[in-house]
Length: 113
Image 1: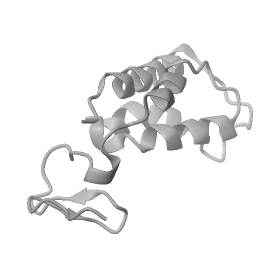
Image 2 (image 1 turned 90 degrees about the vertical axis):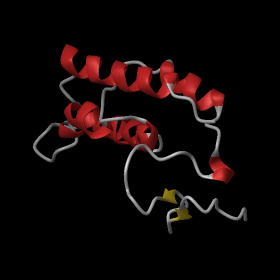
Image 3 (image 1 turned 120 degrees about the horizontal axis):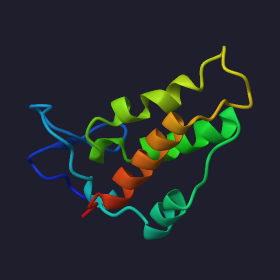
Image 4 (image 1 turned 180 degrees about the vertical axis):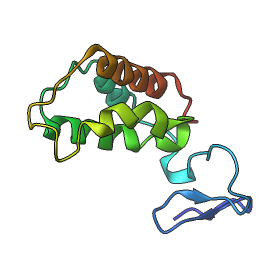
């Protein structure tokens, strides 16, 4: 295991924890690069049909949440579709597609170095 930089400490989840808590967090040393093939797969995904698919893709995007400013705000429309009162076959609308495309764009444009 790599010794963490003195600017931050590694949290129990394996991500850096900054004492001041401010700003976007840089990647921890062992996970400094997001695999290009995962990002490519994320960019090529189409509209989702079921809540299971939606939960899986939200989990994928959540891995990158530390690198995406206002992640929760962008993902809120999609997260709302996982509520109990929403049918298993989700009512996918253009506004949901826009939020989904925005998350894909934000993940693809980030530098994970």
